[in-house]
Amino acid sequence: MNIYSVRMRAADETGHHLSGMERLVLDDDIAKTVQELYQRAWHNHPHDVHITIEKIDQEITQVPVLRIRSGIPNKSPKSLVRTQARQILLDAQIQSDVIDYAFSLLDRGPAASGGNMRGAVLLTKHSGRRLEPDKDRGVRTVRVDVHPKDRDRLHRALVQQGFPHPRTQDALILATKTLWAGVIAELGWSDDPDYTTGFVATKGTYWRFEGIKEAGVNLGGRIYFVEEDEDTAELMNRLQQIPIWVMVSTEFAKNEGEHAYE
Ligand code: COA
Ligand code: AMP
Image 1 (cartoon, rainbow, N blue to C red):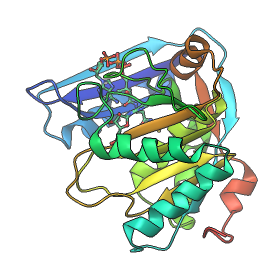
Image 2: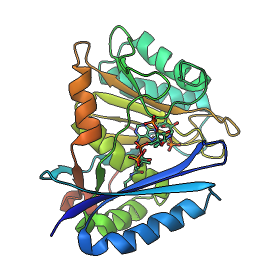
Image 3: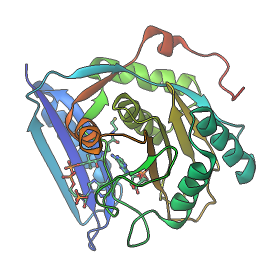
Image 4: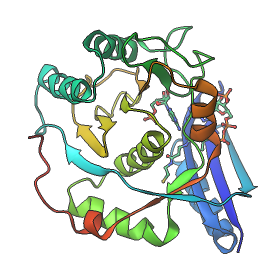
C-alpha cells in the first residue's frame, strides 16, 4: 500500500486564499478524499480550487495528539481571556514583553506589508526576534493528518469532550505537529471575522480560548515561539517536509475529566 498527501487550496477571484485542507491516506482512499476536499472547498464559493496528490516516499512518523482543555468559561471578557492565555505562555518561559509583542502582531496583522500572513511567525522566546525568512508568507505546518484508523475516534472524543467544531480539530492536529517539530509554544486565532476562538498550545496541551478577539475583526494569524538559537532551516524542514500521522491514545479517547484552567 502506498500513502499519499492529498491537499486542497481554494482562492477567490483576487487570488485571496479561502480554505485549505490536507489528508494523508492510503491509495485506495484517494478518490473518496478528493471528493471530500472538493466539497469542503465548495462551501466558500471559490473562483479556483487546486488539488495536489503526492506520493509520500518516507516512513510516516506517528505522534500522539495534544490533550485539549478550555482556557476559560464561555463569554468571559476578552481581557480576562487574554490574561489566562498570557499566563500559560509565561509558564512556558516566554518573556513577558515578547508575549505582548505577539498579541500586538496578531491584533494589527503580522505581515510585513500589513494584514494577514500566509503562514506563521517564528518568534524567539526571549529577545522577540522574527526568524521567518519571508514576513508576508511565514512558515506553514504541512504534511500532517490524523491517522485514518483514528479519524472517527478523534471526532467522537472531541464531541464528547465538548469540542465539536471542525476548526478545533484541524487546529489541534496542526498544533500537534508544530510542537512535535520543536516549537515551544503557539498562539493563534483566525482571521475570519465571525470566528473569535483562539488557542495556546504548549507542553502537551492545546488550550482553547473563546472570545480571544472581538467579532468583526478580519485580522489573525499564528505565532510560533522558538528557542533563541533555533536552527530556522532545520525547523522549517521539519514543519513543512516530514510527514506526520497524529494518533489518538485510549487515554485521550476516554478523557472526560476536568477541562477548565486550574
Ligand atoms: N493560507 C494562505 N495562503 C495559502 C495557504 C494558507 N494556509 N496555503 C496555500 N496558500 C496559497 C499561497 O499563496 C501559496 O503560495 P506561498 O507558498 O508563496 O505562500 C500557494 O497557495 C501555494 O501553496 P502550497 O504550499 O504549494 O499549497 P499546498 O497545495 O501544499 O497546500 C495547504 C497547502 C492548503 C494544504 C495548507 O496550507 C493548509 O491549509 N493546511 C491545512 C491543513 C489542515 O487543516 N489540516 C488538518 C488535518 S485534519
Ligand atoms: P485560520 O486559522 O485557518 O483562519 O488561519 C489563521 C492564520 O494562520 C492565517 O492567516 C495564516 O497566517 C496562518 N496559517 C494558516 N494555515 C497555516 C498553516 N498550515 N501553518 C501555519 N500557519 C498557518
